[in-house]
Length: 197
Image (tube, rainbow, N blue to C red; front, side, top):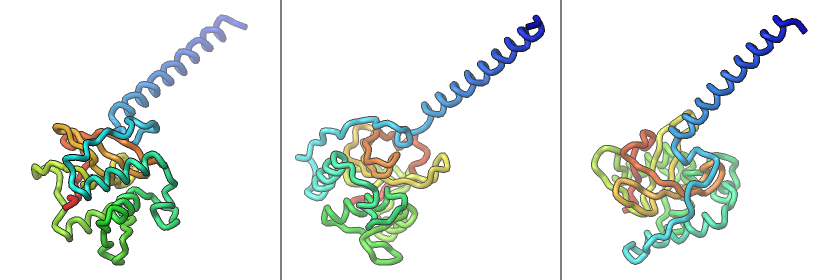
């Protein structure tokens, strides 16, 4: 092999290594920037929520969320067998089981399969709190997220609040029911909250 061939091979190897390094850095930066609900691993165990300070409905919601987090049923369980994104179905199912069923503004059904329609429901009930109006979420409120990272809209429940951070539990987060921590002041996907009451 000639010296020119060896030199060309080394330049080629250096170029490939540089491209791989740039791609790895970009992927790492994206993972750091992306909210944890989109990452492929669970970020937190189910929290120890003090139920003594909660209303009966709030406590039922937390109990149901804890049981479903442990059970990890498939999304079709919450969506009447439909194969579809199921975060809003999960919110609807939990509310029905807690004795506070929602009402789809288009069909009257307890099941609201879309986040936009879920926001319509809360707005029609005077219970939608847009982000930035000073509202502090409470246990049992639904968090409503916009279409971030082209992954679609999303919703989950607040189970606890500590300062400016809420602990949330939601369905269809990477196909599972997962727990995350949310700073609603810095997570720009949050559009508002659906109040429990």
